Image (tube, rainbow, N blue to C red; front, side):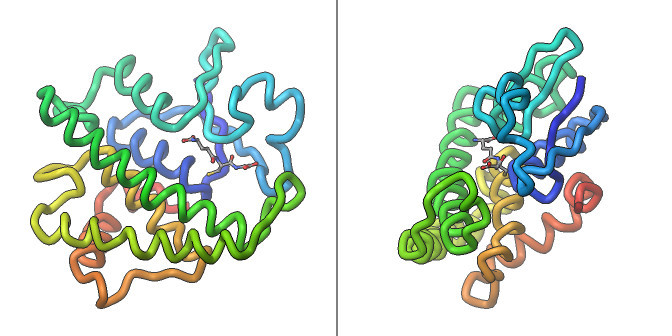
Length: 207
Ligand SMILES: N[C@@H](CCC(=O)N[C@@H](CS)C(=O)NCC(=O)O)C(=O)O
């Protein structure tokens, strides 16, 4: 198996953290997405979404989308106990709920802000600065939900570490690209972020 990635990219980072959590080592192939290596026909033939990360199995089968990759690897590797996606039906639903909230309220606006403010991918998409600024504000506004949650619970989805923490950490860590840093306005998030940085799976995957 091989993982195609670009280590500083937040989606690649969340898969790397997940792999470290389940203690699975896989061959890594670096793809220069900023130089457009993912725009080739050869790349698109392998990755259905044309993006990194994607996983290539030994028989040539390719799986893209970070969470599909994590779910597959957890299943074939033998999931860590307890699973980072939850155990009981209620816990699975709760983790899924918080993870989707992280993805839609934090990840999506942050990525829109990054892409539209920096114009980093203007070789492949139209840029709208105003939409970038609006997205940055939406990202900042959404933090309050997680600030409240982390005041009541040690982890995003409750009393233990899950995929929701992995995704929130990966994207908040990436937020420096839009000149955003957690500060005293969000003490619970800041405290959680510092403790996440010390977690072995996170410390060991710092690019
Ligand atoms: N939904 C996908 C998103 C993947 C994604 O956005 N990858 C970015 C890097 S973080 C990428 O490949 N960007 C290159 C481009 O947009 O051309 C996932 O979860 O894996």
